[in-house]
Length: 244
Ligand code: 13P
Image (cartoon, rainbow, N blue to C red; front, side, top):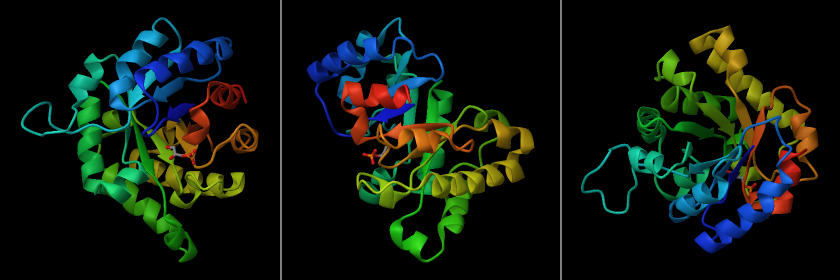
């Protein structure tokens, strides 16, 4: 269960979140938990979660380790800050910041080289779904951004299926729609990396996951977890999702 805070919260607000959240998930042993705050809050999140089962992640990284790349942050820097995870290829990065399948691949390789666990995002836009292109888009994103990884690298990633039309819109994919897309992705994984990898890959669903719809989503065997935006910003709300 991963929370993507996007561009929300200060370091002080991060600490306040953890003070409340950690108590609420103290008994949660059934899943891994990660919070992905903005870069400037990683330190506060790592300090606040030290010694707990809650991991911290970044929301992006650049693929070079260091250099004259003003404004960028590298995998080794994120790792040294104490984060364990990194979200890669979020649709907002694809939509607003020119992310492509090719850069998703570069970032994923860099994350793995730095010892970070990538959460690689894929998902179709509304017009693609309405044109009946969902499966084709997922295949394009998988083939371009993920499938060039070798099997050892692939075994270390998590995939997040986030239909763009369901993000921040309150319009969740039905559990069946999400499960259908997860099945397509699992099929692509099996075809490329074999049936064992297809069964083992963890696929998170993201897009308007809330305390009141998480149970139905998680009842689908295809859905292994959630990548939560808005509902991860408030401790009680994200805790109730974790404790679904
Ligand atoms: P919302 O949960 O706010 O729809 O955001 C989903 C998301 O983009 C998580 O990465």
